[in-house]
Image 1 (spheres, rainbow, N blue to C red):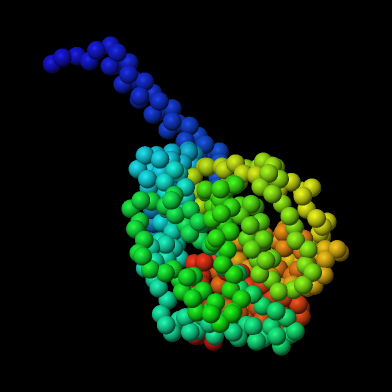
Image 2 (image 1 turned 30 degrees about the vertical axis):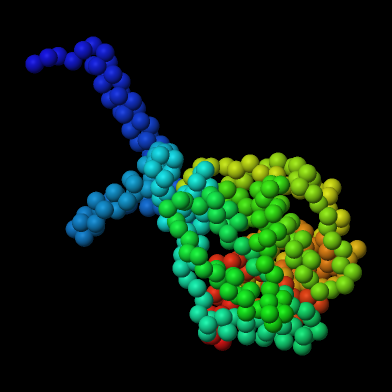
Length: 375
C-alpha cells in the first residue's frame, strides 16, 4: 500500500483544520447569539427548548433541538448566502419560487402568474373584458356625480419593458397581452385608460427605468410615468415638472425587494433626481395605516390648484414626489394587491376631489374584471 505524500497529508490536514475551525466558530456564535425573528424570511426562529420533564417532552425534544440548531447555527446566514450565490451565479437557481433569474443577473417577479402573463398564456375572456369595461364606465359615472374626472393608469410589469433580460427558455406566444386586450375594448369607447409602456421603452435609452434587483420602476422610470399621466389628465392649467435625465445625478444604493426575497446580498447603485430640479416646495405627510389593506398620505403645493385622489399600489412610492409638484392637494391611497373599489370609494367620496387617478400594475389588470364580476 502506497503512503500519502507529504504535500497530500498537509493538504488533507489543512482541510480538516479549516472544517474544525469553521464548526467551532459556528458553535461559539450559536451560544452567544440568539435571533428571535428573521426579517429576510418573515418568520420567527426556533429558540432553545427547555429541558424535558416528561416522557412526551423527551419524545419531541430531538426535533425541537434540531429546529433550534438549524435556525440558530452561528454561520447560518453566511452559508445561506454562499448557497444562494453559488446557485444563482453558477446554476441559475434561486431559493425562492417568487423570483426568477434572468439574463445578465437581472431578477424578475415570478409570483401572481407573472410568468404566464409574460408568455401571454392567460388571455382575458370576452366576459372578463366586458366586466372590465363596465367597471371603468362605473368609475367614470361615480366620479362625475362627485364633480370629478377619472383616469386609469397601468404601470407596466418589468418584463414588458425589459423582455431582453428575461430567461431565454421562456417563450412568448404571439397574441395580445391582457393590457392590449383591455386597451382594445376601452380606447374605441374613449375611456381614459393610460398605457405607460411606450414612454418607458423610449426612456430606457437614457437610463434604467426599472431596477435590476427590484420589482419597481426607478425614479427616472417613475418620472416618465408621471409625464405620460400628466399628458393624459383632463384638468386645465396644471403645471408640469420638467426634468432631464442629466439631472438624475444623486447617487444612492438600493437593496431590491427581489434580491431580499431571493436572499441575495446584492446592492444596486442607482441615481435620484437633484432636489434643486423640483418646482414646488411641496409639503406632506408619510403613508400611514387607514385600514388593514390601505395606507393614506397627503401633499400640498401652494403654487398649484386642484385636489386629486391618487389610488395606487406599491408603485405609488416613487411617483408621489412628482405628482405632488403639479396639484394643490393630493390624497394618496396605497392599497396592497388589488383592494376592491368598494373599499376605497367611501374615502374618495369624503375627499371630494377634482380628479381621481387609479393606478394598477399590469399583472393586476384582470382584477378590474374580477372585482366587477364579484360586485
